[in-house]
Amino acid sequence: MAAKKSSTPNRGFKVADQIQRDLTELIRELKDPRIGMCTLQAVEVTPDYAHAKVFFSVLVGDADTTQDALNQAAGFLRNGLFKRLHIHTVPTLHFMFDRTTERASDMNALIARAVASRSKDDEEA
Image (cartoon, rainbow, N blue to C red; front, side):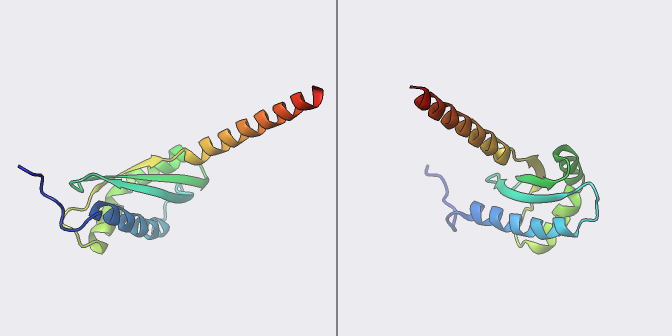
């Protein structure tokens, strides 16, 4: 028997995108001082919409403290999403620190070191 196809293609991506936009606004309204300047990078929703991983980065503040504060506020944020989204199941939110920018910075530093070392070797030869 063939699997049932969703009536709307890419609905999961659209829901994740809407969750990201709404959460951005809801997080700005939080009064918790532990939440510094954070940016939501991506949201991944499970196919049944039961859980959502929310990836964030921090511009100012400690990542672990911000993650703890966001996970503590997850119920409040989910309630806010319930009022904004018009879907049957609003996912449980799981906030995760996104280390992509740190890794990119490290890779850029490694590349710059390699290029500098290579140009030094070329000058000596």
